[in-house]
Image (tube, rainbow, N blue to C red; front, side):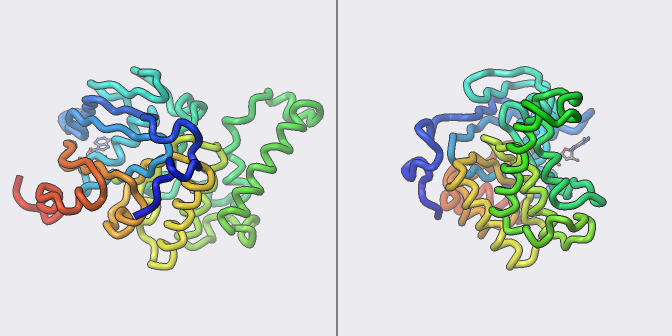
Length: 270
Ligand SMILES: Nc1ncnc2c1ncn2[C@@H]1O[C@H](COP(=O)(O)OP(=O)(O)O)[C@@H](O)[C@H]1O
Ligand SMILES: [Mg+2]
């Protein structure tokens, strides 16, 4: 299991305080109850895994957290402020970034340009200023480039910076998508199955990047992942969903030994 980042100090003075609280959240799509009265929290500095069988409501939960879906019941409290409704761009401007279960990049664009799109929300000056390219806009442009170059270096994707992402192997596309999310300099990073479809070596690389981001940048994370070995290695705490309900919550070791969790994964009748 990984070391406590709070003790390492990487996540700053507020490490360990609750950053996000999900309380009694329910979400339905017509007759489908995707999430049923789920509560859990995410503490600053931790890697919080969300696991559960297909259709358990994991992706829906991330969509609630980042404001893409509005729950019919319950509350989300982020950095001390409760919110009822929030648009994804507001969540992004407040420091929440995400990657998607299925890679969502501009396939015809280069690695560099895709990562630059992650900076869009940080571009405060108007388009006119951007086009004039002097004064404040120029300084901002330089700063954007610096952040992006740092990410390219960090993720070791220098060699593919000009490659259209559609031409990259899947594992590298996932890495570029992670880069785009990092370009937003998030405080809370939501990762939806970042290792799905990867081979062992790609999984190991991605695991290493996730740990390094958490420790070196102090980024708090919610991680949806199916590979129990990865979950055990990376996460501080795990919340388990099944048919939209929370069935377990705790350290990886405790959750893995929980009979309800074992039954859910083995498909025992409910
Ligand atoms: N946009 C949607 N419209 C209708 N049903 C949806 C939608 N998104 C998810 N669902 C349903 O909600 C349930 C949970 O889905 P999802 O959150 O994707 O689960 P998971 O990510 O755990 O596999 C499933 O029954 C799914 O079919
Ligand atoms: Mg999903």
